[in-house]
Length: 332
Ligand SMILES: [Zn+2]
Image (cartoon, rainbow, N blue to C red; front, side, top):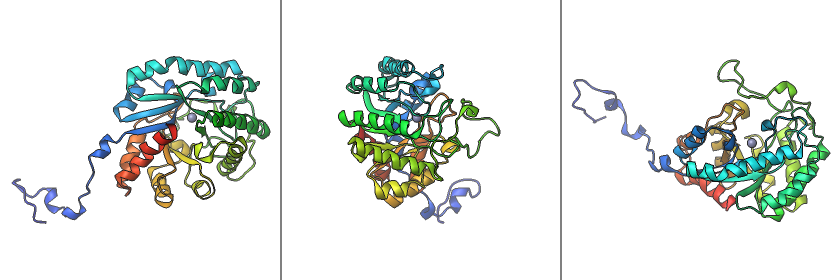
């Protein structure tokens, strides 16, 4: 402690050991990042500007999401409207906000869609478009909104979509369920105010009978990808958890994508992401916000996660691999 300041009396830095001083690379503030799974077209203009301001280089917006269809049961034309709405607005979104935006086209399994076959047939023409970067989001899920979708039915609709992904050499974004009740909110940061504008009383009883529904769904998803002829390294398992990581990393070639913007919903923190990277390496890890207009979202969460990963001991190259290089390679 030989640092001296011309201050009237000693100030804090004089008591700080230089060896304890953390060194932060300024490049961390400029590091580009890619959000591989969100629904940013359902957010506001200001929210999308926040993506750009915090360094978002590219994003994939999932056009499928029953939250935005007013009618129950959901029909193919309702889902197609969602695809068309996103497709219609994509160019203007990119012009306004600089980042590169692409779409995910798919049939979400969060609500049963009567006559979904018609949609899968249409997917061929959509997936041939330059604007479409992935098939999704889809994937086996445990509970549905308003109307259940039994497991055999889900297997069929997911497999068929994975066949389309394989035919067009697109990655597939597969969401994974979190809890037998479908949506379990571990804690609510603001007392009893729910973060989800979805009537959870309309969620149906689970179709997956397993203690660990995420693991069970992942196992089926991987099986379906194999059956569909889609390489496992083209499969992105969204809403990853620390608990499911050992199975995915040791027994598959799939990517694990951590939803970092809803710790109150998915119970994932930067510490979980760092632990998985430390144990299995960064090569198959991705980050996503899944931000959507129906949830209390935090666009800056992804950028904040990058800072936290550094504080938790990951080096700049590793963070760059996860935030930028992995998704760019996957989507190119
Ligand atoms: Zn999503």
